[in-house]
Length: 328
Image (cartoon, rainbow, N blue to C red; front, side, top):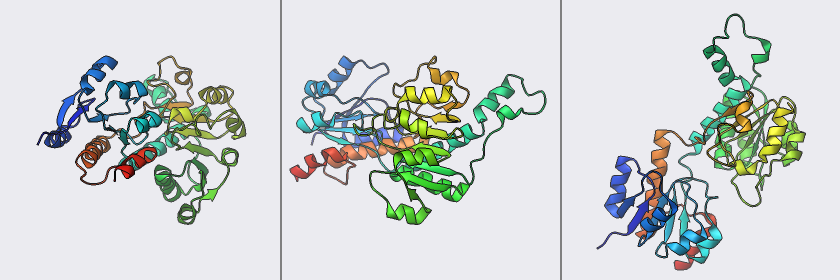
């Protein structure tokens, strides 16, 4: 029996590549892969494993044998799900395995901004520590404060657990629907989006990027925030109006921000965010630990195996689940 042919856009961990080669006829992309190189590599392939690659209508038209795209990420805003549905191409992603890791980074950014950790690190390295630390470099307390989580999904709950039981924070949240279990477990209080922004000392965005959530945090929301508020985004850059955030920071209408994601990535070195001392930046590393990235890769390969061999359960993006249901 011939193995299904798949294209893996970038090299995976050695053990995971061995797993892939056990079930598939694999080809692997190289650095600086051009769009035409990608199209050429996908010819005859039924599966495609890609870390946040753009799955467009043009790609689907150019690669007619494709049956499943396995995203090595939990978010799938890079999928044109309508075009995939029309071409009967199933899309999968990697939920669950990165929830704790993203929650850890989110808390880390909160602490880094609140206690001015990166700014103080630079202060020492530039030999400015000659006497006591000036009050302008003092931080603000995290414990016992109010935190608003915008988007109370799996990762939002992991964050709530850490902040409730690790920092004795009061939990507020906004979500499309109320979560009675979360309210009972963490004493969480449901509020509207604007109420969250007006009430909380820390505001964390944990929403997927969709047409409904694009720039959902904008000028009105930043105007609601208190001057000492700290804003954290480890979800997707596109859920925030970045110009409105920049204005709020430059005009000191909020205390600071911790950002792991941006509308355009990579972020350019001369971007206005990089000029602001009260902003802590990380390069979209929410899931970037070796263990978690390996788990994501393994899940992506197992997703391909589940669909192409009909063995096990695949994590199919909800908007494309009907493709599998119809086949059954």
